[in-house]
Amino acid sequence: MTVIQKPKYQQISLDIARKIINGNLKEGNKIFGRSELAALYNVSPETIRRAIAVLKDMGVVEVTQGSGIIIKSKELAFRYVNRFNETYSIVQIKNEIKNLIENKKEIDNKIDNLIEKVVEYSSSLKNINPFNPFEIEVNKPTHAIGKTISDLKFWQNTGGTIIGIRRGEKLYLSPGPYSEINKGDVLIIVGDEDVMEKTLKFLYEN
Image (cartoon, rainbow, N blue to C red; front, side, top):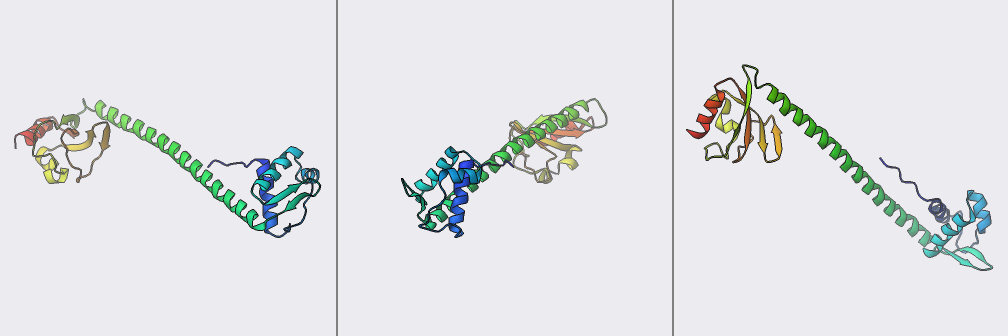
């Protein structure tokens, strides 16, 4: 998970706002000048100026020449902290979603690579008996379209086992008995030498 680091001036403005909410700093009271705050937070005067500018814009403090920095509203300090927390949470969620999407892409790539290996391995078995993988495209009218592998009693009628279905650009490996056969599907089948002939006869001559 990505860790989001808040800018220093924002950390300081939130810290001051929380002190106002907790009652450590009271409405109407004057807080340290910029130089004292810079020393307290161990930052530059410019960082303090930006932190105070944020609080001033939010109505939490009032900056006047001569009077310095005056605490104006505890309620607006509370709203500022809540508003920031909501925004920060959204940023965290967005980053987590981004990370998940990146992880999903990585997983999808690994799955695609494994599928390619399985297909390559299946192809390498073509010369090995008694189980020869072959492909049959369901490109003609057949009673099998719209039926599941179980409905067709595929193994009982052909002696072959469907180990994959290629549908468009997708490959479904080890389809279950309730997988439906669609027109245009390419069936990847394993069986002995006469299974292809039996399968073609079963699909198109019945």
